[in-house]
Length: 323
Image (cartoon, rainbow, N blue to C red; front, side):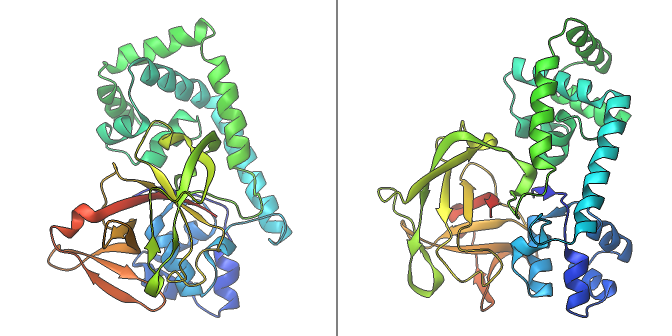
């Protein structure tokens, strides 16, 4: 599952609703300490948890994100201070150089972020932050990354040092700094799962309202085009969905766009597009019962969707959502 760490207003909404931290912890099946870190923006949450938090607090999902127009000033200032603190730590520890070096070497080997992340036994968002120079790397993680890049650890470190001394990494560091500045600035509740920056390449958006909250997806009926996420730019089968169903209730605003990657495997906790015919689909949350069998949940009202083994081939993963 994609993970995201973000400035949030979870604590404010929890108090407004008169709910305790323990109640939220029980709802997510996590510890009280985990809730405290989530509310402070220090702990990552996945797509499923984010949706469940919005359900629990009975608020639109986009309202959980800090934005300069509506958020309390102290929350925005606290987040900015935290970003400044992390930037100073990163500059002192050389994480930017390490991240830029890993990106350069990965590109030279024609490997994708996903390929390296999976081979290194990391989530995509964790490895992405390492390449962005925004996360420390343990010795064990460094060994896993080196193995994913098919290099001995010492050789990997030596090559990064050599690239840095020759000045090959400065441009990458500058690009990363520019991207991180955009990603770490509260911007009117605009966010994307997984923290991927949107660039200028366009991707097709489909989807019109069907019966019972279903979505009609006709490949010949493009609704519009929107900027394509970086991770999808080389994937011909990727597409986006216009949020034209109210089966998600107030969790997402009507202007939301769901980005779908048919090549990505679907797992527990993912939000997925479930095709009930060639052109009609349901948006579901993928769950797992005690026997290990996958099933889906639709919202507003809640409805269980039984998934047989053949049905799993009809699932396509929503990799992130633009609000």
